[in-house]
Image (cartoon, rainbow, N blue to C red; front, side):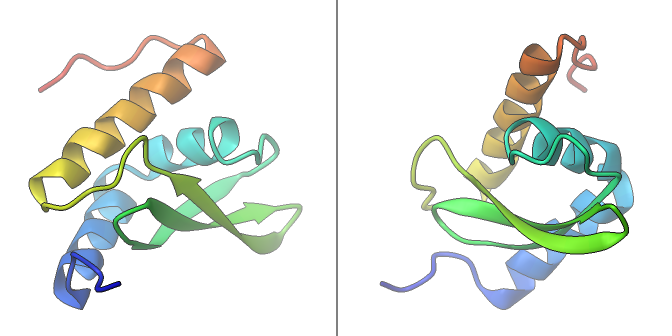
Length: 101
């Protein structure tokens, strides 16, 4: 199966998540990624089925993969799916999501 997103897209998404949404990534990894003790998260990759992170737990970096709700086929779907994951993570943790903007 061919990955729908090229290396440039994956790198850009990861860079954006790390630069602008590090807290969101950490929340997603704590709640949806099964790492409630994580203290840091950085995006390391993605494909049509999910997003990969490296999270720090007890000063050790471990890989985490968070599956998407459905298979993605277009770049525009990445943002929609990451926002969905963030909102689900907020709901599960009892935090109000930021207003969309």
